[in-house]
Each structure stands twice: as structure tokens, then as C-alpha cells.
Length: 266
Image (cartoon, rainbow, N blue to C red):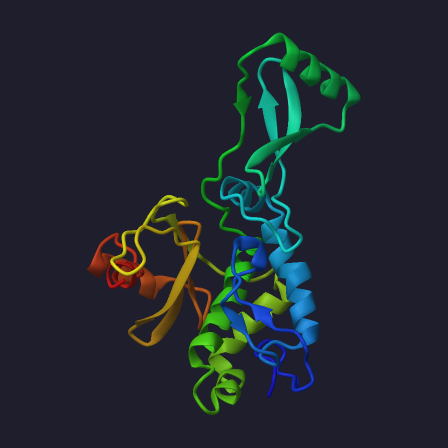
């Protein structure tokens, strides 16, 4: 077996690979040992996933959805407490479903504490997650997920590892994920397709939230990975840095998401 990113032998690797990071709520969609070698696993976690998770959008979206990381912590965001006019670090204690307030400023802490005694009602202004920036951090993160989705969908097929590793059409995206290649702008189509906390109806499971979903969309001779995380849809071309085929798909099919059919078939 060889790593789908660096192509080096990976039979001795001990790490499994979460396609969507655990910090975004994924505990079940995992590539087995060897599909991503230990070296690439560590590098991607540090240089590809972490910059996205630690971005303003990454922190705010995880805070809004109260999704804890593997250490059980929900990221903190900056909030404005109107009554004391202080900026506070606000996080969520998932086990108690409670907000926790802190501040690095002793003066702000004192003003906040004093205001809790003076006022019966309080107003707290918090940031909201909108759309992540269409930049290199997002593109590398989505490209990593796209390659792993392809492997996940094919891994039960005999010879799939060698087939994916040996495909030259995937080499440009592999290199972009691994190296960031500043001279290449890898475009991503990004849009919100449903609220992050939307409850999908289901005859089998009853109303439920969908933290993430994906598919591989063939368009003519191109293949696109379509990924939704917290209601934001990301579409990336696996074969090269362009979106012409997906734009043609949208012209033919209208603004609906390619993921809509999968949702309605549940």
C-alpha cells in the first residue's frame, strides 16, 4: 500500500485518517491505516487542517454548533458584554450546556463581575459564521477532503489504492495540498445551501441534523467533489484548478445543490 498524497510505501503506518476532522464532528468516516502515511497525516493535521479550524470562520462555526474537539473543548470567540462594555472570551461547556466567560484583562473581569450584581438582564453580542473565505487555506483543506473522499468511496475495490496513487490526473491536487504552491490559485465554489442547524426530515430516523455530507459529481470528462460541512457547500475539481464544468452543470440544473438528490432519497 502507498500513501495517496506522497505515494511512498505506507504499510507500516499506524495512523487512521479522519476525512472530516474530529473537531468538526466526524467520528465515523475514516480511512484505514496506510491510505495516508503517518508523515502526511501529521503534516496535514498541522499545516492544512489546523489553519482552517483556527481561522475566524472555523472557530465561530464550531462555537455556534457547540462541536468540541478531541479534548472535549469548544473554541472560544470574542463577545461584547453591553452592560459592562467589556470584550470577553466566550466558550461553551458542552456537558452543562452553559456559557463560560473569561478575559485576559483584570480590569475587564472586575467590570464584568460588578455588572452582574448591578443588572438583572444582560446583553451579549457574539460573532456569527457566514461564508468562509475562498482562499488558499480553504482550498487546501477542501482539496485534502476531496482526495480522501475519492479513496473512501473506492477503498473496497481491489487495486483501488494503486489506481488512485498512480493517477497522474490527481498529481496537481496532491501537490497543492501537500505544498500549498503559491503560484496556483485553486478555485472553490462556496455557498450556503441550508442553515447549519437545519433539521432534515426522515422516515427512518426522524428529524435530524447533518453535520457533513459529500459526493463525487461527474460532469462530462471531469470529476468534482461536492462537500457540505455545517450547511456550507464546497465544490472542487479533482483534476485541475478550474470550475468551468461545474458552472455548466449549474446552468443546466439550476441553483439546487447536487447533494439534494441524496437528501431527498433518505
